[in-house]
Length: 337
Ligand code: UT7
Picture (cartoon, rainbow, N blue to C red):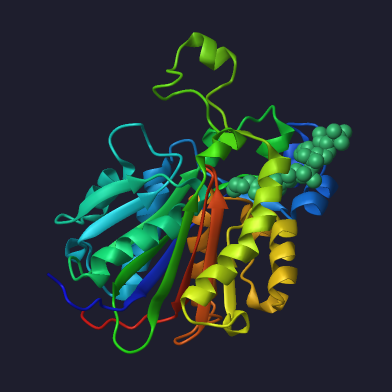
């Protein structure tokens, strides 16, 4: 029995975005939309699209390698790989097993985690428990998606929003006062129909009618999800800050799920923080679901924006419905290596 929990920090972060840029102008040639509408209603200018021979595990491996390199940890020393995704390579096996194998994480346990766009927040919360309790020392959490494979390019309500990418973090024990301070996770299945891929599971197995009816593509009630997101983003940030023993004004950086600039702006207003304190990259990548928070986090860490000791809140929300947040005092330096 472990009597005292260990503080858990981010030893390294990484990200990978496919090379191909899919611009708003290109989308104008595919559906009835405009660059102006997309920018005004969402803030997105372009997104990335995986090459035809790239699947989610390929993106995840590239991001995972970067996180391990930043941490200075060899793949064979990783204890657990968690891949948060709603676009796994296949229904079976778990993408995390493929990723662990390809990384060379030969002694690691591996599983996928399904919490859609909240996946990285959920995955980090789960992975951190293993480190805090002393069960594992090095946990690699990856959010990775190839959403362009499940987006319906005949549906302008959704196809302009999503892109592909992967972000990763290596969690480990840290010395001192830093690390993850509080976790806030929520779910409400009453909203299951608001953002879904109806077919391809046990409820509606794949057959020719489900394919003809395009039920293997993502469907969303944008207005309802928007309303939900505006309500919970500031609430989740505030809640986790209080759990961490912080005042709202103690939050130095907010790393939100990148779905819509207007959702982020509403959170900025409600929280009374400056735009400079919010990490935003959705104009370049659109919504990359579980990859959105870790890619933004990695960019902010590599740019030197987030530094040792900074008080950071991560917030995610998405299909499920799921939502959640993490409060952490940035601590990247390994206690053990
Ligand atoms: O990560 C998971 C979470 N997902 C989200 O957070 C998405 C949340 N929702 C949103 O971000 C917004 O609801 C959208 C960006 C999806 C839509 O923006 P909106 O301001 O809520 O637009 P709307 O759905 O109310 O549609 C307004 C109009 C409609 O036309 P009519 O009925 O007023 O004539 C739509 O048909 O805009 C039309 N429209 C478009 N027009 C041009 C919808 N999509 C497009 C488009 N281009 N791509």
